[in-house]
Image (cartoon, rainbow, N blue to C red; front, side, top):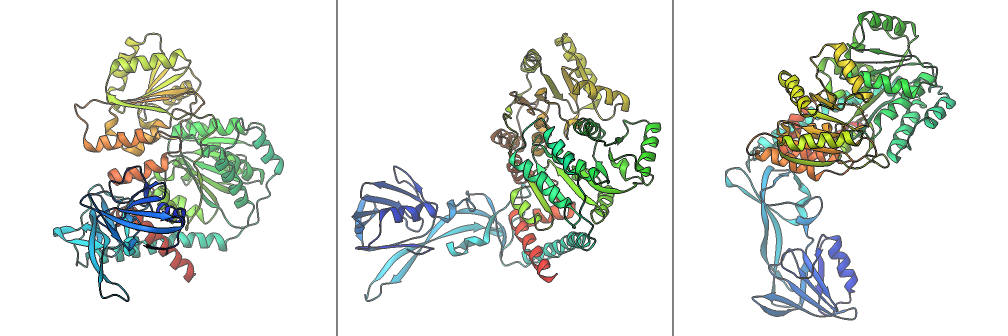
Length: 618
C-alpha cells in the first residue's frame, strides 16, 4: 500500500484491518450493500469494494492474512482477477464534496460547474508478460463557458475548491487570459490591503510602550463578582487581552463570537484593567441603544471599583454632554461610552490608553478611517458578532490577533425556530404563553410608518399586556425611556424596528416574532434571533412571511436558518450566507468584490500566500 493508491494482488500478505483502515482514511463509506462508487462492505473473510476508478465492484477473499482470490462483478457475472489498483475517493472527502451542478474553482482555469465523476480506460503493460491489463482512472468533469470541459485527474484535485461568493457567478472560458488577469489584479489589491495592515502592525511594533501596571486586586475583584462561570473560550480571550496589555506591544485584538456568548464581559475586564493602570478607555458603539446598554452594564459590573463612567450619545442632553467632555479632557472620566460622537474634534482625551470598538463594520468609511488611525497609537479591542467564515478567519489571522468565542454559556438552550405564513392566531398565542411564564417578547415590524397601528391592533387583542414600540426615528428621550422600561421588565411586548439587531441584552425576553421575515438576509435573521435565548429559559423564534409563495432565495435562507439551530452556529451561517447571496460585511467593498470574483476559498488561499510573502520580505 502507498499514500495515493491501494495496490492489491493475489497471494499478497495484508490484513483485512489494514485495507479497511485505508478505505476509511480515503473517504470510502462502509455499507451493508454495495450500490455505488466509494462504498465497501465486510462479511467474515470477504471485503466487497466499489472503487471510484473502476466501473464495477470487486470482491476480495482472505485466508488469514493472505489474499486468496479477487473477483470482479460485471453483468451479474464474477470474473477472477489477479490485480487491482484502488484510487482514493476524492469526490467524497470533506474538502472536496462536490455535487453535480455545483460551482467550483480551478486555480489555473477559473470558475466552472462540476458535472460528474468520470472514468478513463487505460491499458497498462504487465511486466514480464506480453499482455496488457485493462484499468480505469477517475477524473472530475468540470464544465466551463461555451460548453468547454476540463478533465481533472485525482492527483490534481488539490487545485479545485468550492466556489462561495456570488449567487450566480460568470463561468470562466477555457483558454482565455481573463482568469489570469483577474487573479493578478486581486493579488495586487491584496498586497495593497496587506501592506496597509502590516504597516499599522509595524508601527505598533516600533512604537512600543511600557507594560501597563495593572492592579491585580482589581482583576481578582472583577473575576469574583462575575455572576457566571466563564466559558473556556471566554477565559482564553480574557487571558489573551491581559497578556497583550502586559506586553510592550500595542494591542490590536479582535474578539469574534455569537450574540450572547460573552464578548462584553471580555471588554469589561479589559476596560477595568486599563483603568486600573491609570489610563482612559473609550468604548465606541454604532447605535445609541447599544451605548446606553453598555453604560448600564459597565456601571453595574464596575460599581465596586473607583471608576468614573460617562456616556456620550444623543440620549444625553447637550448640557450633560458638555459636562462629560470637560471631565474627559481633565481626566476625571475613566471610561467613556458613546457613539461616533466620541470621534468629534471637541472630544479631547486626557490620557487615552484603549479604544474598544463594538461592531466596527457598522460604521461609515469616515469613522473607520478615524478608528484605523487610533490603531497605531493606543491599544485597540474590537468586538464583532458578525461571524467570520473559518477559512477567511485563517487568512485574516495572519494580519491581526483574533480570539474566537464559540462555546456557549452553560445552561444556555438553543432557540426553537419556526417558519410559516403569517398567522395572527399563532402570534397571539405565543405572546400569551410568554407572559404567562413571566417573560417578555419582541415583535420585529420593520415599517416605521405602520408600527403604531400594529401596536394598536395588538392592544385590542391583548388588553392585559403592556405593549409599546421603538424605532430609530423616535425622539431621543422617548426612545431611551421605552428601552429602559423594556430592560427593567415593565413592557410585555415591544414592537420594534431593526434597532434591536445589535447588542441589546434582555435575558427575560425569550419570544421573538419576525414579520415579513423573507425581506431580511440570513445573517440579519441570525443576529436578530440572537436577541432572545440569553438565559437558561427555552426561547422561541417565529419567522413569518406574507407572500403566497416564497422565492427560492428566501427558501434557502430559511432552510439554512432552521438547520443552524445549534448554539454557536454563526460561522456556519456566515459561510452559508456567502453561498446564498454573496453577503457578509467582514471585508470592505473592494475586497468583497475580489472575494466574489474568485470565491472565498481561493481568495483566502491567495490572502495567506500574500501575507506569507510580505512577512518573509520584512
